[in-house]
Image (cartoon, rainbow, N blue to C red; front, side):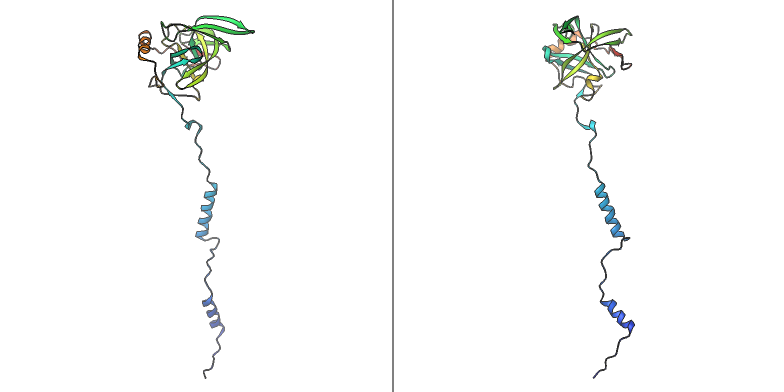
Length: 226
């Protein structure tokens, strides 16, 4: 019979350690747990992207466009797009003031282009403003609001009324009419469509030069126009 030999303390400890399974738990300071924490934190802090307000698509105008006055039967009227003028202006012939229910109104004639048939317009006076022309003269003009068709949109526009007999355009569209509604490409014209050929040719023979007839606005109390 073989005699059993008792193991010493060191040998017993070695046997126990050999049978013990290694731990898979990562220490708090280990590289793997730090990377996981960093990744989860980055995911939690990520915010949804937002498009800037001006990223939305706006119609683009050229420096001159054909527009209309739908409430007054004017299908085509050539307008100059002028970002240097704050307020829009409209040629008003035969301007006459009258009262409706104690409010001031005006009656005038619009000529879509030189030598065209006149169209009568009536509108309530919203205000009267001091306007300085490109020649340096200042006058107090009535202000009215008229719906204007610009491309596929119809917008309400404030106009100062004056005589524009010597100007190449019967209407001028200023910054107030354009702001947050349209972009302007100063190197192009008639991006929103044109009237039929005979009408364009008649207008072209009358509007010789299409000259630049305005200067920039000086401040909030004075509108500069041609």
